[in-house]
Length: 138
Image (cartoon, rainbow, N blue to C red; front, top):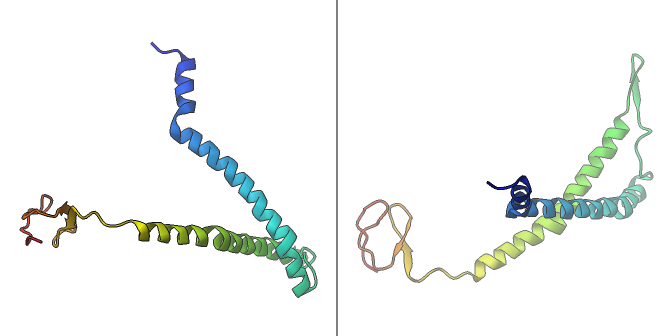
């Protein structure tokens, strides 16, 4: 019988727990970088274009109820700018790297696709092992 200490150690050292922990730490650090980029670079740009970096003072009143749509505009603008930063500085470069990596991979010359079921079969096969249809020799 294993002790709870041994089981806990195995749980912590399991690959997916460590990967998840690393992902959370990296995600938190990256969030700080993106927030700094928005606050220090993009918000002053918005201030230069619109004249004010903060829309919190924008409100309207209906029957004594105050609607603070300026706060909503601030949050919406922050979301859009964060999404744009993540898209252009993370997603686009990763997609480009994935395209380059996929281009470099050469197809396996010892297999081919079955014309009926599109499964990978040996190049010398005369019948598909998956759908059992006859295939012409190469």
